Image 1 (cartoon, rainbow, N blue to C red):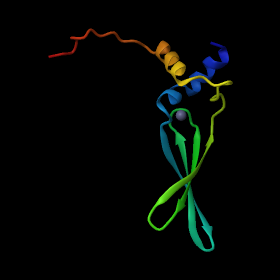
Image 2 (image 1 turned 60 degrees about the vertical axis):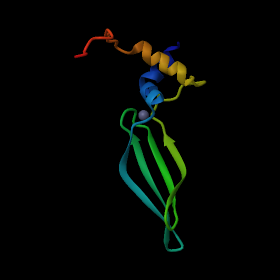
Image 3 (image 1 turned 90 degrees about the vertical axis):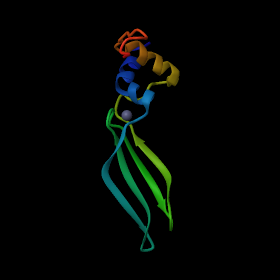
Image 4 (image 1 turned 45 degrees about the vertical axis):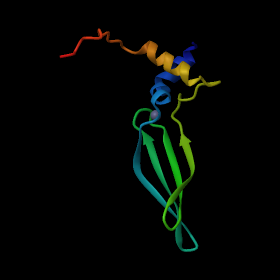
Length: 108
Ligand SMILES: [Zn+2]
């Protein structure tokens, strides 16, 4: 594994494995068309890697439909050429601190 992949996994490995841990930043934008609010957008930020996601929703009478999501990845997130998720998880497993328990340990 190249140094570049090792560095990228340090930034993005947990989020590639577990998916991002999104939290709203509180930034919401209402978009008006012809005097009525038709769309709104909100910004989310990952608690682990700080990638941002901007979701845009279309407002109808009784529902919201997400029409687009855009991402702003942090520097170092991307892996050139990609890496299959199974390989990402294998690398995460290799780097994990291991605690060995026997099958009956902790039982009453
Ligand atoms: Zn993340």
